Image (cartoon, rainbow, N blue to C red; front, side):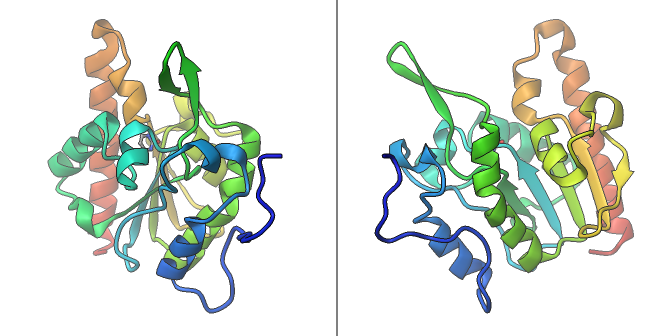
Length: 213
Ligand code: URA
């Protein structure tokens, strides 16, 4: 049995909690097996009054080590795109749909793997708590798994990235390529993928400024 019984945490927002309270409880989450063989929970990071929320997939090696989303190679590319678009990362809230690193052993090394549906489901109450407390005006989904969580299972990143959507909870939602996907493109498609990511983030920055957020 991978689940501990004592000291159990109920995922999601409890009445009266602040973002810091929720983050502190998420550190003890055992709702899926991912907690067992990782360094720490990587909860969302950024000011609680951020108006723009970025949602990725799951922490990687560096994120697991440092406890902050998007601090590894994908995060560095994201930081470049944000800087080029004139968005100050310290004013944004950055999170993931899954808050522990999913990995698989390859030889002696741990390799990132996509989160399972069961892991995404187990973690969803934490994302809901972040959305409920921050009530962001704009959400930028990085990659298809995040986009499908916010915009529905039918969302097709290849056809619908770069377009604005509205949900009952968030007035402005846009999805783009995941920076890690850009980084694994072969040389002949790398530049186009990078340009797409940067253009979509520039579009988010335009909306952010137009709304005077
Ligand atoms: N990829 C993600 O989706 N999230 C991170 O935090 C890092 C890489």
